[in-house]
Amino acid sequence: MADLFGSWNSRIRISIIILFVGFCSSCCCSNSRKDSSSIHSLLRSMGLPAGLVPKQVKSYTLGENDRLEVYLDGPCMAKYENRVIFESVFSANLSYGSLIGVEGMSQEELFLWLPVKDIIVNDPSSGVILIDIGVAHKQLSLSLFEDPPDCNPQAALRNPLRKRRDFESLR
Ligand SMILES: *[C@@H]1O[C@H](CO)[C@@H](O)[C@H](O)[C@H]1NC(C)=O
Image (cartoon, rainbow, N blue to C red; front, side):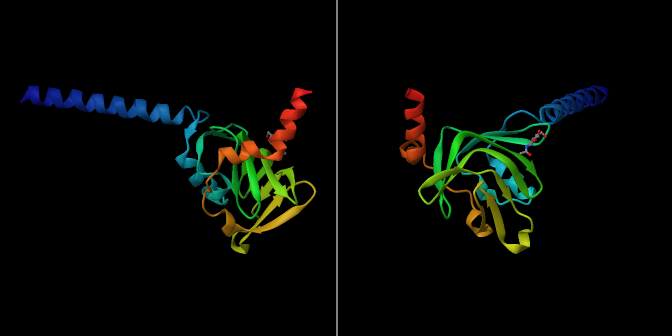
């Protein structure tokens, strides 16, 4: 009987240690790369549509100052109303209802590729999302961004923006 209790006790002790180690490794490393599945729920929990970030996300980090960095396998192109190119790493300051100071994301506008600066959802019930591309603030329907889009790497490599950049880097 005493032996039985003894082994139970040690089993419980081991389980507690395992739980504790698991808990610590999940809470102490808040700055480490997280896998892709949770980025979309993170965006939703911040009042932003999940489709702002494509399906093909590899991982992301959320830094101490709420700088969100998203990692893809390479640049790729997605289609919302207009075409958007995501760089292999794109980032922005994340706060409730906004991505401010976006880097690594450009949008096609009348045959020009313009860097996206801010993305703001002031009021989700309005159904409207604001995209600041510097020269213009675009108001688009939130529903365009509901589901994470497919992002095509070949299309991004063929785009004129990249060709021009490659050309410039050759000079
Ligand atoms: C983003 O956050 C950093 C750190 O808080 C800040 O220094 C920077 O100015 C912010 N960028 C923009 C565009 O607000």
